[in-house]
Image (cartoon, rainbow, N blue to C red; front, side, top):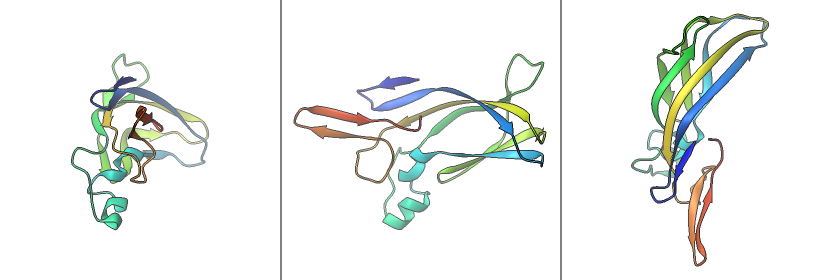
Length: 134
């Protein structure tokens, strides 16, 4: 993860290893993008009546690690407000099947007080950053 304090921008690559403990195969996974709460198309912004230009997560790559392949395979995904559905090339097997997601992302912290779980606050003593859910 990288944090540009001047631009208030967090970016990085995250690897998620998911194990399917359910008795059913999973053709897709749901992830939360909490930083999208301030985007104009999020339910929270629609309820509050204002979105923020440039807010939310920017996804550069969403990929799945496929056994035997050296490079993760890019996969389709759908973002709806603070939720993202990742469509998998094949379902994750039930009862212990695993999959690895690789996601390149970036987002800009918004001023604190909007209800999000990250942000910044300018004080007389300097800027305070709150970073969570990266």
